[in-house]
Length: 127
Image (cartoon, rainbow, N blue to C red; front, side, top):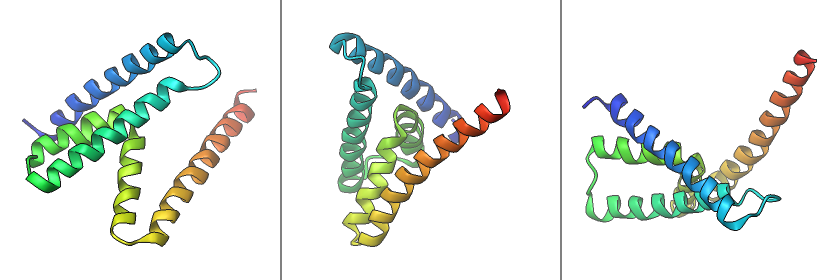
């Protein structure tokens, strides 16, 4: 099976599960003032990528194909926050403290800035 098809299949499954789980958590908790569904998905995604990355390291259980399906496709669509967190953890684990903090800071600050710019540019051109 082609790598693109594997990633796409995993991505479809991850996105559908993200939507389903997030809505289920919101409905179950009845919390509307805080994105608890997104938090639950992000935390579960981080738990999964941590556990699976450790299995991959310790037991070498993933082929390149299954790695594409699970990590890039499924977890990539389930939550990119898990990938961001795993990348940051790897930098910390490798002793790259400056890059660890730089990765966190730039992703959060530039990400928020990009949302702000996107909203303001769109508001400017739409109105």
